[in-house]
Length: 223
Image (cartoon, rainbow, N blue to C red; front, top):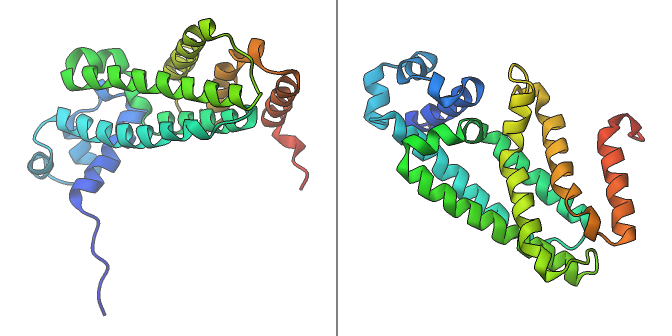
């Protein structure tokens, strides 16, 4: 009988590294700790990833690829419910790689590759949000003056990018723990979309409030 092929060591290393980075913050995780957590020798780790930056870059590459694929979905947003789902999905991806955002300034100061790629990420996020606003406008969900589009899109991207940092500063000991994830992501999605309230058509504004109430009161499930 054919045996299942074991997971490649390189894959396991990335999975464990991501978990450690997310739990403790990248600056607080050494390659020695990663090796110990995996139960492998430092030499085995260095064989696959000769430097810590290579671990960071490999994880970042995965994040960037997933993010760009997700941002492409912005052209399908037509109403506030689509926008809510889109933003929440973005926050879920950011949460999956939250160490990047928790330690963003430190990482950018030490890693030139991340510095340049994150600038591109900001551009792509802004472009996606503008596409979202354009689709909602054409569908009659929002009414926004073209002169206000740039500032609104930028504000949404700022909240999207720095929301987890805000959560962390507010409650450093608990904010980034897995048990806090869902509430943090819902708050993030809500605060990004709150920036659209002045531009939402009345029926969309009302539906946004329904969505907020529903997600803030999960006990209202009808099962």
